[in-house]
Length: 353
Image 1 (cartoon, rainbow, N blue to C red):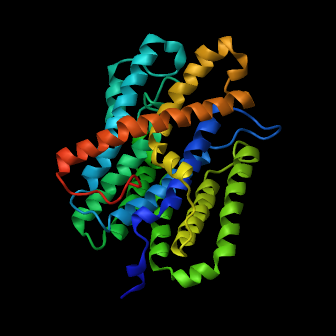
Image 2: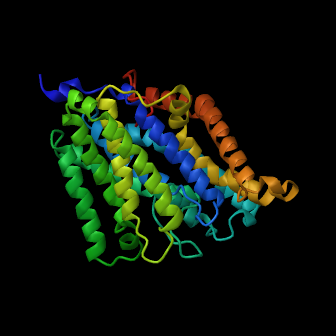
Image 3: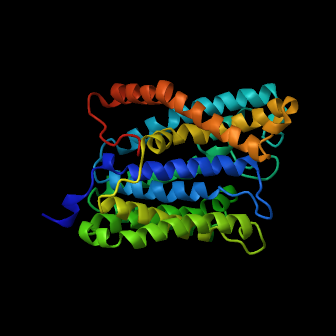
């Protein structure tokens, strides 16, 4: 029996859900715009944590799912994203002041629904639902992995890595406007970092990981501190680079996964629940922030998200609303759709996928 035969089941990797909770709350905090003394607001590194997580999870589940890989990804991503994109589009139609830079018309809506990057009126490449820009990368990554699985199941991870770097190289070498600007972004290397993290996790010896626990704890804590410090004090300065977010996020992920490999459960019911509903939280928080900024805070200044108290209220409200939507709408709908499309096959991967 090889070392990989002792791998923890996906359901036992609850530490990943804790990371998802940290990443999602970090993104919400960053979008509130609250600052801390001389520090810039921080939390956008949550996106980088999500990306390395995605690389890890896709590599892991590609070993367990073959024929249903892409279907499961799409049934997980599309219904909530399309729903909140349409809600946001209608909201912007009714109240244009919620996002003055959003490009109007039906074409941007269609491009958003189909995950096609485009430039807004302010030159940025955000879809109708602003947070959806990361999903444009995610869907591209899923398609790459699906293609790799079609080419060769057993070598899918390495083929996916090659295809990913080929896409980035093409975007750099060939100037094709939006395509080159978007897919040439170095943030896509974070998917590769997640894949590498999985390969290390899959061969790691549990007894060795137990002996390394103090080091792994220190590495994880230090990486979180460095993520916050770098974004708060250095990232927005001239010369600031996103590459460090990827490096620190990788160290954080590797620490958590190897601690899990050692038999340590880094989760609790609250963090697991927030992690499960993190996708909904990621999708809804910008719209909720707009409501607070442009509607509620006019009558209640303390609830302005840029104030510390207001930011806490927004974060708590966003988390509670996402949990309610996840438990009562998103998760039941996801299970029902999978049942219709995939039949009675049980999804043992929970919401990590």
